[in-house]
Image (spheres, rainbow, N blue to C red):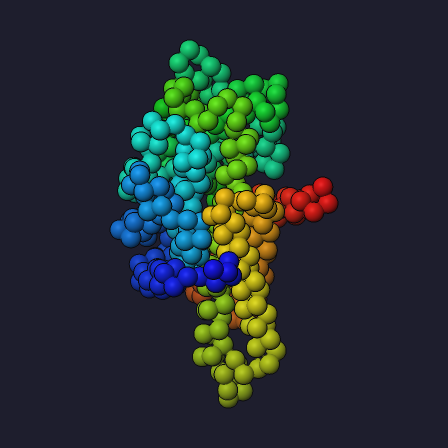
Length: 381
């Protein structure tokens, strides 16, 4: 199979998922965005479709979906509601270290609850002074017999206040730089505090907050991997999640193009549909080309991840997929607003939401400037 085409089974999955999202997710998107509320109805509908189980192994109640299947799912959910897509993505992100590095005890205890939709997860890596520069984090984890004591603050935590568990990166050896970082699975009930929730421009139905750890005691068995493996775990995880951010961006861009195209065909000026105006037709053609290029790059990166990254290309391809797709989402959504004219600038039409939601895909899980650093380094050293 070429990485640029989907097998018939995935095409059928995509078709089924699109119908589900059009009926059970999209109708809620505007309301939750407007009210900045967690999209519980949409999430519950996704649970009924067993979507939280998709990224998890079958042995722990999951569906064992590969990254290509996950990309299709994220793309279709994001096309309906980017905030709902993020609720599914962040839990998968929070559990990826457990799947790949956690003990059997951790897997048995937490993965089935996430797969069933009973529990959700967050990923706590960034700090006020440690965004792109992960190694400069100041959160610490000090060993105290059979526990670690965590102290510090994490910023930009998706699902803050909703999640049952927080995958936290902290320094067990502050003098060792990135080699002194370790990873822990922390339950919300152990003293995790949400200091504030951000008032965001986009993804307004997905809570993002500042999470504080003050003398939070974490059992040793809740360490993920060995001491000092945290940076490796974080980068390994992001390499595999960045293509899925690309899939989210493709979904947003697709929604923007679909809506704009429909509008052009139905809007009449000078006695004919404005879809007949060549200047606008060329804009639509450029939008469609960029989306297809982005989609192919996302699928290629996911195919490489599914193959186990045999040639060590995933960091580069994941960065390319995330960077190109998110730039595409922003440009396509902006063009969609332009194509609707004054209507596109109002909240009566969804393209302004697509534009607001698209912007964050250029920023989180590594800004696109960082992605270009990764790409250039892979080429130039």
